[in-house]
Amino acid sequence: MTEAGERPLRLFMTADAVGGVWHYAATLAEQFARARAPFRAEIILAVLGPRPSPIQREQLAQLGNLQFFWGDFPLEWMPASTEEIARSGRWLLDLAAAWRPDIVHLNGYAHAALSWPAPVLVVGHSCVLSWWHAVHNAPPPAKWAEYERHVRRGLHSALCVVAPTAAMLRALAHHYGPLRDGRVIANGCALERFRARAKEDFIFAAGRFWDEGKNLAALDRAAADLEWPVNVAGDCRHPDGSLPEPKNARTLGPLAATEIADWMARAAIYAFPARYEPFGLSVLEAAASGCCLVLGDIPTLRESWEGAALFVPPEDSDGLAKAIATLIADGDRRAALAAAAHRRARNFSAARMATRYAELYRELLARDRAPFAAALAAGH
Image (tube, rainbow, N blue to C red):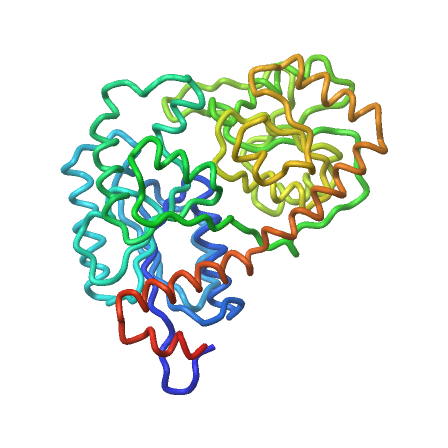
């Protein structure tokens, strides 16, 4: 908390309501709201893309330190012209001019190239080029060239670039060139909201079924050969309107966070055979819920869960079925892996994430010689 007469840090943050970025931003804002970080912050959250749902808006309304604004602009990875990105940029700069932030924290790339009134950091949660390489093992089509230019310019304009894993940071440097200052700050969640209950004989997974990066279709194929049922939560409908539903797994559709937590609390095994996943928040939540983890063998997931999960090559549906069947038959091994994952999850608390960001904000402010830096350096 700040001392009497000292104002909180003013943080300007962007986000979207489509996936994990929303949970990340809301979790970080909550940590600063409840003074679980080294200092308190007041936050402007500027959300672009699809309109947040009533549940998402209610989640923000409970945070007294946050003002929320929504701009109906396409996200940079959606079909969008340079003109649309410029238009959303003008909207963001107008908000920042009125708010006068101390730090600009962007959860996207293109807008880092704007003339911001404060130090800018970019967080690389994912990107099209690394997704395309992981899913198709090839460069993206030429239609993504404009996107690549925007991302490259944004990354090279930021004072600092953060990624949730070292593997994701390497991917950004590989696809867009060396970064000026790259850092790794792992994502976190409110671990206390996840509890293991008596485990039941089923496999659970969560994610967009249509997303080839999540690779839940491989789990659906494996489900045909498994003794236990497979339950999959998440949206099956592709943005193009198609509906590729599971054939062997049971689809639960989109669920509220509390419902997903309930399923994880009861699931004996959490399966996530991803081809592409820069961090894996659902994996963390499953580990905190006492699930045994079966994961795609990719660098990002290895980085976080080596020694606490069973890994299977993403393309090997038969191997996935055999790995899960082995765990179904061996309760002792299942329990040992679940216990290891539960211990590992303690490394990824929301409080630890917020503390790491607070330290980075302090460093960037000191580097920028902002007036607020002295107050932060004194520990207020």
